[in-house]
Image 1 (cartoon, rainbow, N blue to C red):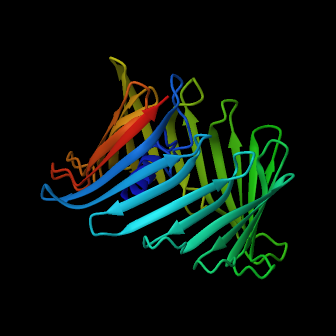
Image 2 (cartoon, rainbow, N blue to C red):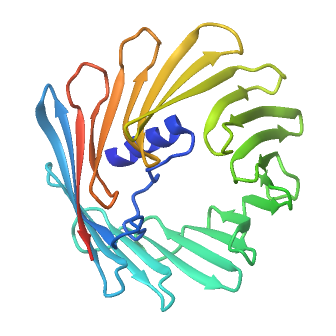
Length: 329
């Protein structure tokens, strides 16, 4: 859905995804003052100011305030109904998807939980049988340490991923695509004392394939610049510099992107932030002084994001909107 595309763009542009989740999760309460949950979303697309498509999503919750049903109906008559079930510990146990509104599940995901482990079964066609299975192992802190993907549900893993956590802010992530015990790719990530990424180095048996380095302001959290070696040859291929101006409670962050360490600006992003949440994001994709993309967000007094409107091509017309309605207890 379009709201997920917009959220992905915000994550991509900000490098930290402030104020935006990759997938809207109404079970997550981000308000310090009240317990607020999404009860409706209206997602609308426009062409030349004329509405061309609209989806209305209705959220309902159970007695534990957990999402129970998501009903999405579009202007073309399409109806998708998703049902959610939980165990006694409020963990998701079953997610059923009726993709054509006939009251029959066309796909489902169910979960089994153990001590330090969870198993996710995916039924892709609604026949009640698992078509793929994902096994996850967690440490005592609840962090993932291993993930095995059985793509055919035949009890043989095709992909194995492992995570190891060092004592000094070091995380190593390995991918074994043949499940033969030999990793084909691994990434080592170093974090500072604030938990912010400082360097990420990706390697393969052939050597280093990518390096990303980040520098921060004195607080250790606000990005100052990002340098990326995209092919592991030791040279910077992309360089992003952040400049911040704070005025009347609004922080304006300008990010200029360069190809290589020296050279002309390739593109410019501008963020207007309030309390670490974006109020607008603009992109000049070729640094010619003309805005090519802009999205504006609105929020209520609790900090809940009420929606957005986006101009996707910089022509000054709104191409899509999202309107959210919350219930706050």
